[in-house]
Each structure stands twice: as structure tokens, then as C-alpha cells.
Amino acid sequence: MIYDCIIIGGGPAGMLASLRAAKTGCKVAVIERNNILGKKLRITGKGRCNITNDCDFDTLMANIPGNPKFLFSSFRKFSNIDIIDFFNKLGLETVVERGGRVFPKSQKAGDVAGALVNALKKSKNISLYMNTRVKDILIKKSEDNKFSVEGVLVANEDSNIQKLYSDKVICATGGLSYPLTGSTGDGYIFAEKVGHSIITPRASLAALLSNDTFIKDLSGLSLRNISIKLKSENNIIYEDFGELLFTGHGVSGPVILSASAYYKRGRETVISIDLKPALSEAQLYERLQRDFGCFDRKMYCNSLDKLLPKKLIPVFVERTGIPPTKQVNQLNKEERMKIVYLLKDFIVNISDIDDVKNAIITAGGVNIKEINPKTMESKLCSGLYFAGEVIDTDGYTGGFNLTIAFSTGYTAGESASAF
Image: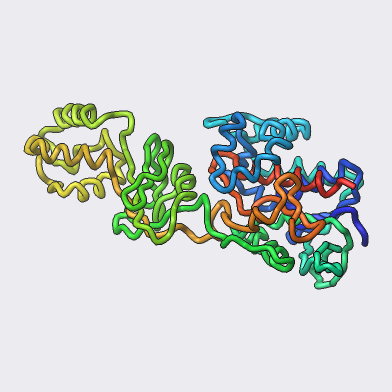
């Protein structure tokens, strides 16, 4: 079989690439190893799918910690605003929520995937190969030792081997996150075959792990409207405000997922949680005085109900070092200030980041220095393009990673379809 363009991977980047290439009249083949397209897309955003972010261009760039300059051309070609318009034209209504996050109005990630799949199936120029895995990319070498792509070698679910030919192949295989959805690192192998270097894949937007003994006691506790500081070797390297979740092994939630992009292994790292960011220490002391005035005959351990979630109180009390059965009216100023200090600086020691397979996004991947940012084409192999998470670039939470996938997919599809 001969195609104008072959796309490896039926995720968000691959589907956008196929739709863009097909629109120019190209005969396109999409190779997907699963029995459905967009398998990971269907579970993103806790099943709601944060499609993109309704922000200005400068804010968009500022939310890409991983090689933002590389994405400049793609974002200009197919921006976050273009993405919203694209889905609206597919018939998918969207809503904008806190922080500019854009979701389908239905709040169902399956509807986002469904809109893309329906568009693919309507196209007469797209052939879908489901339950089919690319075993290898076919490469030829010229007399002057330059690589160019010839096609792919595929195997279906019955292990039947077939060659599909094209001088344009887009690698949109994803990273290593959520391997059960098909992201198992195949794209790195294909890239290395033609000489690409791979920046070591690592977890990004992942939970941070802790060996603190109290962590298990707080498992499942969600804290809202708190602020955090990520400190590495006593230096503040990231700050955020929002929601945090304690897990059985550490901390997660939106503020932690974003902070994790800054975490570096091997460095002494802590998360400082301000449990009452709206109040200064002086204001918090006055608040504490009022609360304790109401509970002056209660034991200290029973006097924090107005300040803290019930699950947090025993841990908090122990960490202040104040005897839990001491009566509130017997607490001196120094002890009361200990409480204030802990409310403003509740420390969680970080030991590691969660495994990449559990991360929302894989950081690392194909070296951007070896990819043309205007076309997504390999600088080492003519006709080979990259799109999405397989590339060494990543963003914060808030729809920015899907924006990368859609924009690079669009760029690769457009570039590969140019004759």
C-alpha cells in the first residue's frame, strides 16, 4: 500500500496531523495499536478533558517550562484560540472555567475524542489501521549517507506483517506516561534508528513522594485555597495557589502537578504549605485568639475545628509539639505562635517524583535541536516528522500539554502534506 503520508499514533497529535494532511488532498494512513483512537485523551482531566487554555499568547508561552521557544512557530500557526474554534466547528461546544481552562460543555472527554474520530471517519482520504503496531520504520540511505523515510513495517493483532509505503511519516507515538494506553516509548526507538538523541524521559505533572511518617495518616485529604512553595536547598523555585491532595505516598493535586515540573532529583527538597494564605501572621494570631476565647476550657487537641479539616488536626497537633490535652487557656504566647508558624509553613519533605508511567505527561524525548521547529521535520532524516509528547517539550496543567499536541500535530500534518 502506498500513501502520501503515514501517521504513527492515533492520539490528539496524530489525529490533528491526519486531519490537516487529509484536508490538503493527501492520501493518509493512521496506524493505531489500540482498538480505539484517543485512548489516553478519553481519560485526561479526570475524564473531563481540559482541551486548551483561553489565554493570550504571552501567557501561553509562559506556561511551557519545557523548551517554549521551540513551539513558537507551531503556536503561531495553530494557536490555543484556533484549537477552540476548530472544535467548535466540529460541533463540540466548549466552556471556559477557572484559570482559562477550556472543557467540553458536556464535561465528557469522550466527546472530545468522538469529535475527532467522527471527523477522521468522514474523510475519504484517511485510512485507519486499528489494532496495528508499527514494528519498524523503513529507511533508505543515499550515497552521501543521508537518511530518508520510505514507510513503515506493521503487524496487526493476528501478527500479520505488512509494509506500508510513504516518503512522509509522522511519529506521534506519545511518551511513557500511562503505558496501558499505548505510550510505551516506541517513538524513541524509531528516532534513534536515524541518529536522533533522546533526552532521558522523566515524569512531569506527577505526584511528589514523601517519606514523612504522617503522610499515610493524611491520605485522601484535599486542601483547597492553600498556597505552596517548592523549596530546593532552601531556595524557592516555584510558588502556586489552589488545591492539594495528600496521597498514601506523598502529595498531588493541581498545585503539586505544576510544581513537579521544577523538581530535580538528588536535591534536598520540601513543599511548604501555607494553610491560611489570606491571613498574615499577625491576623492569624488574632484569629487564633478569638477561636481560643470560645474554647478556653477545651483541650488543645479539640480546639482547632474552625481552623483545620478534622483529618489534619491530630497530625498538626503532634507537629506543634504542644501536649494535646493541655487546656487552651493554659497555652502561652510562644505556644500560640508555634501554631501560627505551622499554619503558615507546614512542611512536607519530598523524597522523589512518582514513576513516569503514573505521570500525566512525559518530559524529555526527541531532542528539539534535531527537529525543524517550523515544520516538525527531522533534521537527520528527510520525510520523518514528530508531533506531540514524543518531543522534548512539556507544559503546566491547565490545557497546555494538549495545546502542544494539537499545535505540533497540525504543523506536522500541514508540512508533511506540502508537495
